Length: 383
Image (cartoon, rainbow, N blue to C red; front, side):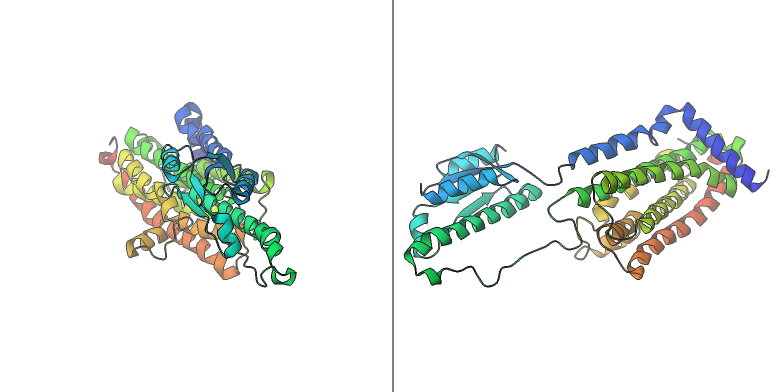
């Protein structure tokens, strides 16, 4: 049989197996849909909204009433209630009924007229994302209230020309990221993180079960047969990658700043790299259960080591080396340089070449080891 015929026959053989085995087919069909759909639904709001905040108004002045109105008007906050003191606020926050408390101390109005009065925010730092959102929203509220107080109160007792807006106003912006929304930042990273894990599990299962069940003796694989066996998984998961991208870019409106074609090429390079690792693990261990266990360690922790959420600059040398050995790390860098911002040719080529390099250095020894196992009946039947 010629190599093209062997390639097509191997594709057909693998597809027939998937059609007859619904749980193996689940890794290609409803499991990616369920997991990616859950992630998309969770972050569809884009930003954290209606975080409950308590107000401790010990001054009973117009400042406290103004802050209460502004808390209700802020999109990220909602006024959970007014309490008399910090002790009561602490009890409510520890009961997880509120995220923070804004304290207006006694004599705040009088001290504001004399110079400066502190308004203190107490927040629960156990939830960093919510705490950061509360700090940001509360800062904007106090700044707006301060501007109104300067215009209406201080101007009433000062000369008209003495109250002016500051000559320089600081504006901060998040670089290389989607400001004010977590949807693009997290969903664009979590979708490929889930897909590459499911892809590697599916490929390891596909190659490992041939050794476990002894069916590899009937198959007599070669390079063309191995490529054909891999093709259904590459094709299906490329489709899932395109669908996940269409959801964010086409439906949710997060349009590409850089090159869409290079981003899709990155998906293909990432899958090829994980295919090489999967074949290498299966050929080296010759045991499906061990290969799946190592897959969980290798691919399951990719998101934490990618440097997209937790920076790697201050990480240990081991963490940086481990991150570089993960194809997903390089895919995350490519995502930033093709979707969120337009990177230079060299900036985009680096992650692509890294993923293709991982594919090359794993698939060659992986194929050699797997073909040796295929010719060794003593390797068959292991659980």
